[in-house]
Image (cartoon, rainbow, N blue to C red; front, side, top):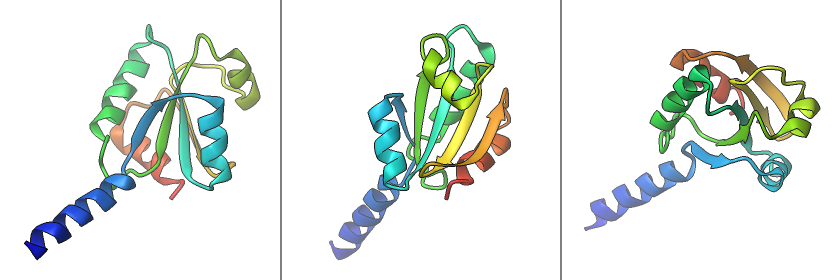
Length: 123
């Protein structure tokens, strides 16, 4: 019984630090940055095949403690001010932050290793 409780606690602890994917909101970005947490913005367009390939990679990492942090998915078509704020000119751009400091930026990458490296840059 004690072993099962230890395994459950370990699993829940790992999930607490695993990749979390959420829709973008200014409040979520601000809260995560102010807390000094790893957070990434994914400028996604539904019509973009590269964005869909990135989404598939990111969804494969949900719950993976090796890729901690929060991925906020921002609409490339609707978040004009956000794109302007961060100088984003292309859909499929991923910007990674540790708090408010940018640690990585990739555009058009679908290679899982490259995307993982970018997300892990905020650890």
